[in-house]
Image (cartoon, rainbow, N blue to C red; front, side, top):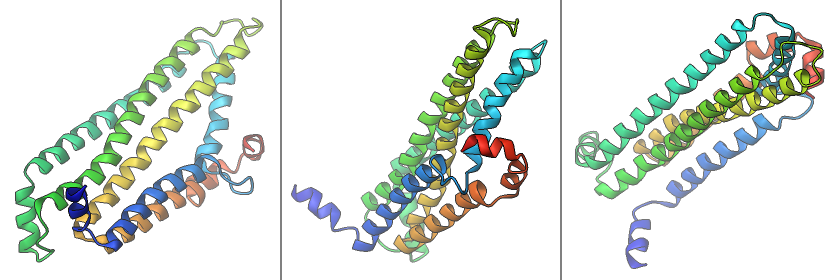
Amino acid sequence: MRDTLDLLRLFTTLDFVAVGTILVAWAAIGWLIENPPRTRLSVSRLMAQYRREWMQVMVTRQPRIFDAQALGTLRQGTSFFASATMIAIGGALALIGNAEQLQGIAQDLTLGRDPRIVWELKLLLAVFFLANAFLKFVWAHRLFGYCLVLMGSVPNDPDDPAAWPRAAQAAEINITAVRGFNRGLRSVYFAFGATAWMLGALPLMAATAITLGVLWRREFASQSRAVLMRNGDAADTAK
């Protein structure tokens, strides 16, 4: 207990506020994107309806080579990001194991003379976000595989009573996979922001605000969202 208290004293109140801010911001923006107000749907919610329509069109498309290729491309994307985050985690852990160099650079730049454990814990915040991203990407990759199996099980005959329900199942699994992928991407964004803690608590809070702004704009005020909103039927259905 005493060791824990001594460790906590190495950080200021502003440090704890900054860490709490980035964690709350990460959770809040994720909830807002996945549960947007009806008056302003997020890109993720708009795209979910397009994915449902994709699976409906697939039922009557012959052959379905395009659909298989499209889903294969999505799986490749999740695989790439999973590999990239794994490499980033390895690099961060290696840096934690050799924190003396980071400590020396910080002293040369007059960023402070904190003990090694402080720099290690600051790096662990970024590792936390990277690890979450890796797990989300891996799960999204697996769900895209499930979706591919469901797509393959959709009967070729549109009049088959199992065709449309099976296509709807594939659409929902596809949407769930993309939700996990998007959560992974948000964690990567916040991992970049978390590295600002190396410069101090105020830079961390500033990086958190910038990350929030970027995510909000891309989901609620981007040009791509304006293009998606041109299809009024899709927007109405997504509500």
